[in-house]
Length: 455
Image (cartoon, rainbow, N blue to C red):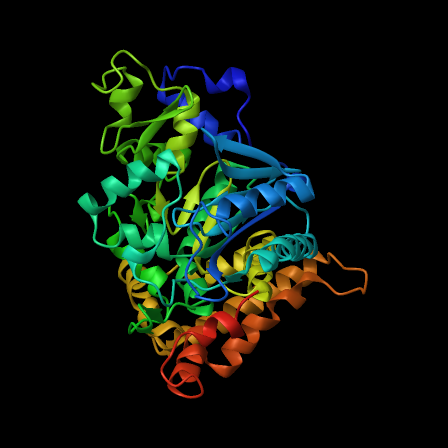
């Protein structure tokens, strides 16, 4: 939800305003929508290198041509195009030029899949002429961190300088990871809490199912979801499993407390990003920050600040599911199908909560910590994550069938879970499949991944 201009500039006078902002996301059930976001790596088809921003085959040309040919509106920082928008959807740039589609809020997974398909077709129609391809994976398989380009965005400059102070892999998170996520609505605080707890406990299951980042610098890295591992050493102040979500009394107010303890990155003022990295948002509210003396935080600053925490599930005016590696087209449709099936049907939500409600804190962390390496094969209680994933998919499938949103052929949304069901049946994640190819037909090279798995 965009903030009305009058609200953006409102100084924050009380914590209640911050709580009310989150509560303003509540929507009646018939207004619930599905917002799907995915990132992808660009590469030059002749050298496999990531495209830079400038140049005849650069990201600038790609964005400006997309805008001209397909009616996207351009947002700029200075002279640089950094985002496109059209019909409540946007295309944005991640720090190394990973291209992200933030989809419009849509009613069904059929709509979502159609949107993704149209987007990829538009991008391909321009990228092919430029000799650019796009790859869906969780982590850049070939190029080193120092070989990745940087996009000219003020926010990223601040983060780039701050990240090495708080973790070892933050710059990898920025430049070498890609994800797919879905944003979902809630109707009340109680509904938000229920969905937050259920989805947070099950996030490692999504990580296991979507694990697709087994290579670093052209070699196997010992992980199946290295992208997920990267988050474990990015910034402990703004990542993780948020144990407080499972404590009695959790709600909007407790999440506000959490966010007020998250150090700042920046404030965007008069078209410029002001570096406030590591500063205290509470002092900003009081107008006490030396970098911006006498300036009081506004509701726009609060909305921006909410985007600077990166837990496994994130609350803004909706809930974001953040556990999955990027992947090919069919998995971009499968992720929203999984979470809509689990969270948008009461019976499914009850069943999903029953599955996880007795997990201990230690078990939740063991899942989160173990899944990046072992995915579906991670032991859990007397079984493995594979059995947990199979049960989760069954619940989601029943939820989608009960939603009964049909396409023109009369098929419901559960069809989009089929790639996930195949992964569980084979007990082989996308990462394990690529490792098999690497050790077999690819003869120890990751280069074929750019050809065989490009969009």
